[in-house]
Length: 147
Image (cartoon, rainbow, N blue to C red):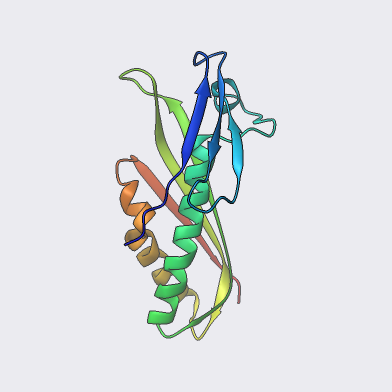
């Protein structure tokens, strides 16, 4: 099975330092990271582990959802998946990700709204990234079927 690699180079303290995360396996991109931007409401062009988790979760979910739709006898026509990953203080100290909110909008020929919803729920349960994130206290799923 394939192994994918990312690398982060960091300089300085948590509050004043910064780094760059590189998508090493693909060579697709390198992104700036910093804790002050990570903890701020405005990211100002700097990514964060939570945004990268959101990207991983949406892309994995979309792939799994496509497979679940096909397994249910449908054809995915258009699907959009977003993930809101929340960073919050951890009562035990430091920070944690207490919640991920997934939103799915789209349609699939050959499925009605109930079949679309069932495929989405199955994708949430079976997506490898969802499984990897099982320690997150709450992962919600909001599904909108566009007929």
